Length: 154
Ligand SMILES: [Cu+2]
Image (cartoon, rainbow, N blue to C red; front, side, top):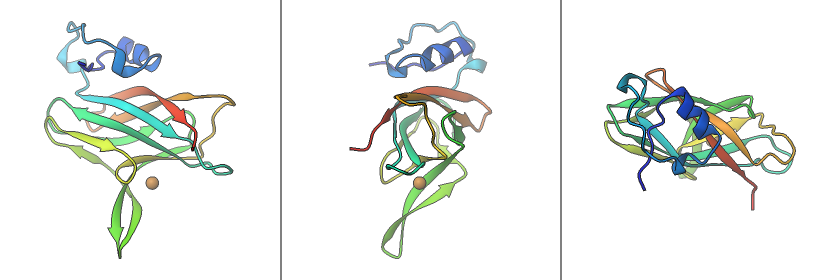
């Protein structure tokens, strides 16, 4: 399936109200200057452990243009969102905060368990809320907002 370049404010709004991966790539009329080059797909959030308020966010980021970086993220349901990665230190997997995640030209990076992830602190959602917008900021100043489902811990 072809993925969409989320291109305009209108497209962002539409994407925020539907599954981003199902929007068809039919509108090529937008100008290149307004076209974010990174596609965010397959995203989801893992709800905090019971009694805790830290959630994790995962997604695929596909850069379809020139080299770019993810520089920050935010969501209305968390006080703070950090980008983290895992690395081995003295034989133990540890998380650490990263300021940027670089995406070379036409590359992709997976935010997935054991690797890059969004760490959402002060996570507080409405009762019964099963999804939330998450905004990813790029080094170009562009922002991409996607709606991510919130998965309960199994
Ligand atoms: Cu983390």
